[in-house]
Image 1: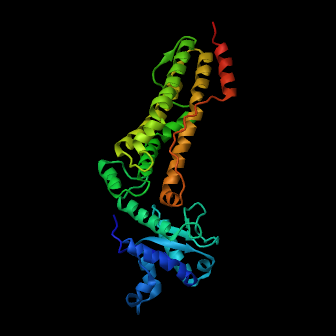
Image 2: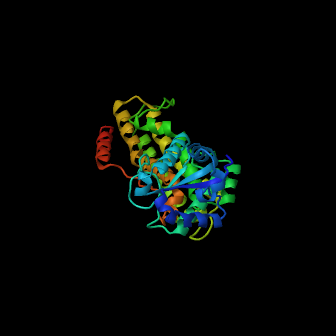
Image 3: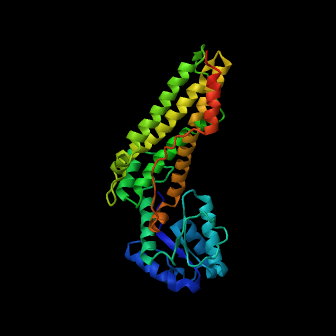
Length: 347
């Protein structure tokens, strides 16, 4: 972990100083090390400030608090700070610029999808606590790309940044599904390597058995694994801490269920059929997995996007939903197509 001299540095226009300084002082009360120009008058005396600010923002602070406003966009010195901060943000993967809106002015180079707080909506205390939580998450060195090890989990639990349970779950799910991405892609290509199984008959019994297996996979997931009780046991009731081992286990079960559905369809595609009508019916049946796979893949992507701005969302009072969508349905047109294919298999 990089050892920065300061935790944060505010970047703002002089016209906004009276709104920024109370946040700076509250952060200092909370133990945050802040690089604030008014406190650095002696240290900055005689220095080339262009070079000094570039060096500080690039190498010596963990986060830049960007106070976005009409004044900020139009201020030449603030423009230099902004461009320096954005250059570093582009070079590193984790978040570095933490925007705080003072009005609705758009900041050049700042994506609209970037999470932000708003001083018109969020109190000084909310913003200060959000910074503290960001720093706790950083000290845990835990992101959605962090390898899941007992050491990394222990660091996360030790620091306990707000929403750590969610971050842990997202990481397990994201990394697990990333390993299955090629299989997921191949499913929609309707491809699987030959598995050595050959169906010599009309395939009706095999197709019926596969329907039972898929129904059982979904039934177990709905009735046993992803219930409100199991989620509460993992993440804790409101106001209670979660259980890291159960959170990891629940995330692994999400991935395992996803893989089980993939494998169900993969076995169909990997089987060879002596009868062309049987092959056609089986290929249609494999598409029964499409909607559930898409739903689970989409929720994993959504979880990851939320994790990237988790502290901001929680600080803003947003309720984070971790419900696993098990929406197994078959498109009516696909189901009709399947029935027609089955009729062709009848003796």
